[in-house]
Image (cartoon, rainbow, N blue to C red; front, side):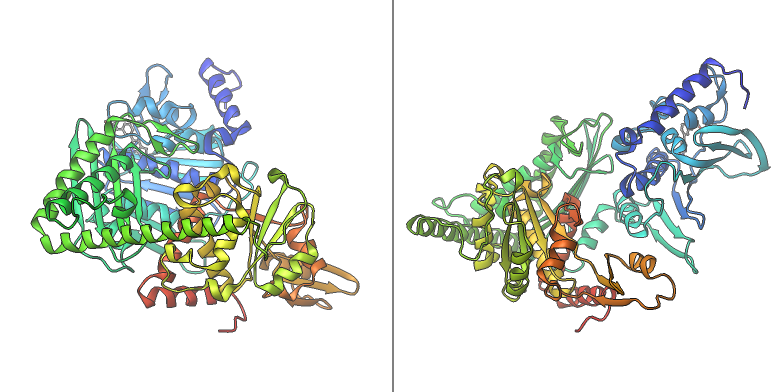
Length: 631
Ligand code: 0RA
């Protein structure tokens, strides 16, 4: 590169420097999440080109050298000279911060949205990046290193095709981890394919001995999405769907009731998962509540004296996808995943009411099944409330003492206190011996009792252990949950590394997510990570928490090392458990995010649902990942 910097080049350097200095500002973090964000950014650009009606195929390849390429068959990024910057447009897009937006203007009905930081950010955070554009009869190529142009736009061979290839290797100087995960990428790419009907997305992994490749194309769009979500459930009727544009908002909804007890409603704005919900979700829930109630009243299924079905009642067992696309999305909330555009609420509500009312009128048999399901939910909720009131009164009579099984800590200050939920009485005893009595409380949970199959979440409340836990936490649950009453800052789930342990963990996470959501949202829930191996050589002792750690301790041959595998917490004594898993400073905790909880919920559905096959599959999959499991 020339050393006589022009004004533009100085701007470029400043911009890239800012990105490399504070990558978190642009991609969230430099861990796994941020690393995958690079791929999403490149894919989002390609999806935009598809939404504009030009690209049909997107191909993502994970290469052996830890690089990733994203290719589309759109128009190709323009290569003509940009008047202001006096550089080829493609170079402007690749090297100038926020330049992408300028180009997109007017061209796209929908633009990238949340992630839309610009491809120049990917470039700045890559050790190297190659951009190829096919257009105007030729293949064109540029090359960059850490965001700086090292090869100017070069005309290569002739080609009739059009499209864009973005090929980058994330910079190990920036990222803590540089390995892409198939599971993470396939989940998002599959979701994008569902959300954009007909778009073909291929993920190819060339890193292993054999190439692993999957294509996602769904001609049914979000109808296919709901079909897929309900694959393991028992649907009550064919999928109800609608798709329309109103006042510049494109709305797509697909929904289907099942025999399940939980709802599964996913909402999106401009292809971004709105985990925190927002106006589109509000409109949907409101419309479903109104339509179901008005039909139930009209048919006399709900009598005049009966109270109306609540939203919670009418969404029980409902699987739905609500996807909106609009030009000016306002993302709000802690994680910027809540749609704030108020007008979207009535637009979605109007369309859903119309469609659902029509469906109910046209299909009296299905309508009856749906209303009956909702009324059953109402009865269960009433019964649970009565039981709750009863147990509250009982508590008051008994002086509302803390449960006898709880081994509480001395410190009454919640901000410094922790509660360990421990699987089994025996491990509970060990944990009691190893805890710091000032700040750490122990509540043993009896696994066998918790392991109730086919339990609806309401029924979980009948469980003594769960009620004990709620009393210990102090917050109440469901509608009456109050996070300010929480008696411990950290709630740490400590279970064995086997199927039962995983069951209990799944059930607790699902319970917390459904009945005590702010607990998860505010990051109070953790999973303890006990070591998998204890290693001894002479008088020296190590712990390994993963297979690679074990390898790095014992080396390739591992001579003279005595290796003990820990399958259960009970196999450690109090001192060992404290040192490896409980002591602040030594221990490793995994903090549970909303995404983890959503995942747990999906697993919960598989485990507790009516169908046996998914449960078998889960246990089989799990068994594969745990060695020496006694089945
Ligand atoms: C602006 C204008 C035009 C294409 C694109 C952007 C474009 C960007 C990306 C990023 C990844 N793939 C892409 N494909 C296209 C086209 C202008 C024209 O041809 O008239």
